[in-house]
Image (cartoon, rainbow, N blue to C red; front, side, top):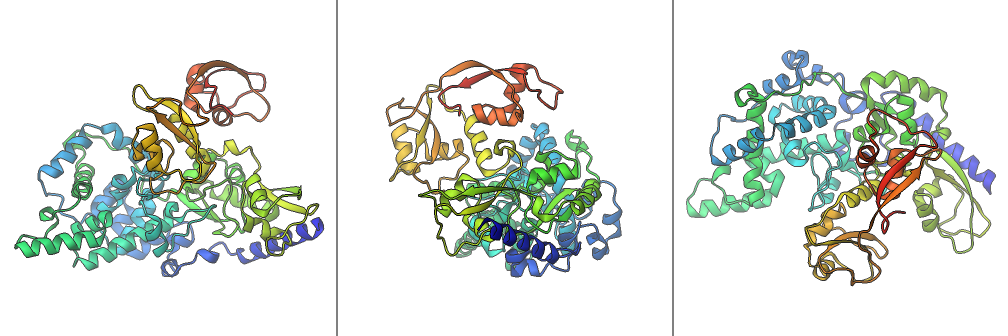
Length: 532
């Protein structure tokens, strides 16, 4: 059976590689929604987004050196507007210049592509700043309303716009596809409200139905129906003023005593067609960049590898494009992830094996001759696995959540406990037991209050009622001396002991050292009730 498994696996990889041999191939297998098919002639989506500006015919924008100036050239909103709501947001941004620096640096990876897409649609350049309002350009942002990505799509709207979501991949965080989806959405809202971008932006935040209802209410009362006159939710009333305030600051930073980080008006990333599933650590090594950079350019990938179902592509810094392309030729598709043999044990199921090896039943079926879901003890399976220890993949969904849980802090007088979810538990019932809010529990665990809870799931709760609900533990901090072993990294040690990398660096005065050496001794301050 193992020989057959290997044969099937290699056949699949050969077929997949052949189907993706053309460098500009736009095939996205099961992800190619009607929305994306409309973009298939757009070189910015299919290749390295280098040719789109030419198709716009705007020579001023395409030749502008400073991306901020290119954005200003495309301004279309009335940024001369001034009222108390705009002034309140302006005052906040002016008093937090470091915030603007952080979001600008974060957005540098994505802003060129966003401006390309705005230009070809002749949309207001100010919209390129909307991800600052939505997510502060944090690609892994996840809201209390289950919105995800820099454009903050909720699951249902994401599906409508072809942003596929599964265990491996969340299209709402795909920089290119989510940008195109957001601009389509906004363009449609603008048409619905007869070109009124204020109402379109408000609808993007609260929903077109909410805005239409507010308009009908004002019409009945004989009141104006412009954005500033409508009775909208508080978040929406602040939403548009935030964008106007940001647009003012970007347009005239000197006027407000600000200096913007320089962002060059040139592509930041290129698209590499891998032809098959690929371990992200291998992609980083072949490209010559840190794994963190690969994740921040490809935040759609939830796990240690690209999805086995596609899209078989990754974004890399454009200056490193030729490096990975040369190395991909030397590495056959079957060697872009690691394979492990596994002998099926009594009581095993596809789901339990998939969980054990951090993959999915479908991925196992693709590379093994399995009929239905039936397994027999003694069968040999070929399992796709990660090249590195899973803790090194710091931006997987699980590791992001663990990191959030370790950093979470409760109010004074509360005790940190770990709760194992049981049948019947809900955010509300747990909030009542521990005298905390539903939103706090969700925030401590990088979740939304609308997310489902599953039995056995571990939640961090800063309880105000002490240690009285089951097998939970108070935080107990101990000083630990840890000797570095082969394969250890700061991220791996941090995850093992539920501490932060920056704390390890601070405790041990590690500044410029990139790697640890076996035998090094580290001082750690560990909550011994939480360390694995």
